[in-house]
Image (tube, rainbow, N blue to C red):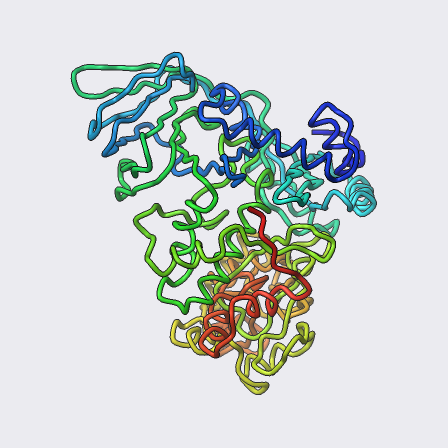
Length: 560
């Protein structure tokens, strides 16, 4: 963390520091990266180096140049049970010298002993900028300072070489309102939003890591102990059966490790190749029975998400990504189907790149309802290539999202969107939500004591028409709610922020009997519309055309 903003080094300078040798042109840079990848892909890499990389989120590669990704499977647990159908090497502290071979089908129980919690500082993200956005970040920092907010500056992300290209996901994060707990950090959220910043995501700075013993037990009164880490490496390509108390049993491919989270409890994580993980992610994130080209489009989008999030999510955690919606769902190899696996393999290594060769952050959502939203509109910061928002109505072609068209689209007066078919059957294309006036007033009262709410005024919509700012008018005052997520929560958990709202019953100038919200879509509305991809595939569009529609101006490339 830095108290002052300094420009991030250019890709060439960053590579020179990484390799500790002069970099003469792109060829020299790639040769350096290839050497690093080869070292990481040796049959028996130094395990200690891998352990240290867990918190640093350094990317590893296999012999083919495919990235290896660490995914958190369980956190905040005190006990983990693991069984494999093949012998498994147990490496206390990740050290080969301490290896213990456990026979096949032996139940292993891992628990913690004498652990301590990490020391952490909690912040709220005000805004994020790409490495090239130094001037914009400097301007934003000045506005935060003028608002009297204590600000931290954090650098994250990575500069990665894949298939002869450099992908720069480095970011500058401005965070505000530090505190010893998440609640203390949230106390400064209103002031940050008052200064024009609406992100509000939590951000954790680790001051001192957790520590303690991890104990592995198996039948015959055998016990193996290791400090801070226990690594498990099954022989061959067998699946490991994982059981967490209170959760269903799941199967995962690749290596596993158990370490300690910030709360001093166990964290179970999975190390596997990106393609192996995708074979679990695609069926977990979309409909396995979708047309083949919709599944292929999903596979490319999910692959880009892996790369775009590396180094940005779970700062301070001993894994790069989690297995929940926060990153991407990874439900284990038991979720895979022949169709989803075929989609992943047919698009192996394919990602979307910007015209200048950068990595596209291929976010996606369930259903857009008619138009997709711009990244910068909902999430602030700079606009992102391929993520400006598109008109999803059939026949709209390459037309971008049209401001002011929301009510026409929601009334189905402007033609159906690609997501109408399967989206309507799933109840996400068009929907009606009702919330009692008293219930909404209680929700608003948790934000600010405004009394019975008599009016809800949309004061800002995004490029697609999604509601981004809502003024709540009550008998005792007013309150402005910023951000589509906060607005959806206020109104009782809406499927999206793409809606029009009316009142029903009650006195004309007082609290109504209920609020009626008619909306469309499901999710944040940015990037690929999954139901829209299904509609386009049913109409005969290939996955390349689907990707070009939802991420206009990008190009498909193979990264490995």
